[in-house]
Image (cartoon, rainbow, N blue to C red; front, side, top):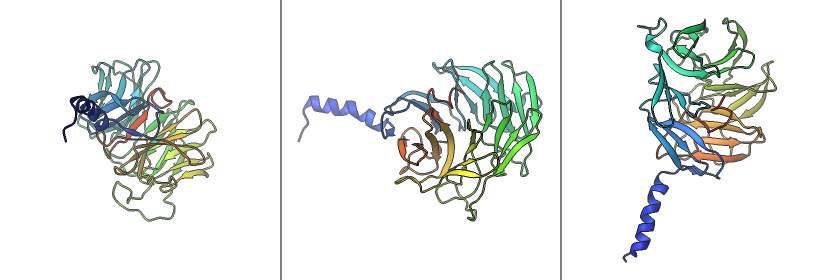
Length: 317
């Protein structure tokens, strides 16, 4: 049976939308995410409206107040990308401020309101702050038991008290440093009496944390990476909340990555390496009710580690 021409044209117009729209459980959040060498912005309905061919894996995205996106390139440098997809600022970590010839990777950074940028340099073992021209303003050394340029540190958060909270992935430890490199607080992520298991997906198990946030109540929220969950820890190191791998009906958590706390108190969690049957972003309430989910296995894939709501607390901080 032949379709009428009008019906065929309508179907043809719908196909790109069906192929290139994220699955969202409700029109709720605009999203920025990166995977497969692309950085993508989605509207609240899950439709992509900005795609940048970055050609590099990404572990952090910071959307600046002017709309530019700050991220890393091939773990060796930082780039700032305008909404018109022009690179307007770069910093070559590999060859600047004494790093030439050293083994180095960059997975986390932060742009301050005054234009300075802080960067954690894996392998080199230091945290630096540079001005817009790349001049070194400040530096201190972090302390790791198992140095590794790829997995010394995943994410870091610059706190209101001037300290920095660093996720030392290989060590399985969240560490708060003062500006002179003194350890102000640290927490060893537990294995919860389970043996380590290799891999990146739902089958893995460990304490290789990816992300941590300091909450207004002084507690620390930690995405436990291959611990497949999120924990809230008091300054006295007591776990007072735990989202575990199978706590959410119909969803399995794998490598938990991005973290965001919304004004409502709900938490958005990045769910990486969980496979196409699971969402890549999940909004969950404190009583562990799923509020919203996001999934795009067309443009993105199973290594979506960097993601956040556009205009939310984690893209504009």
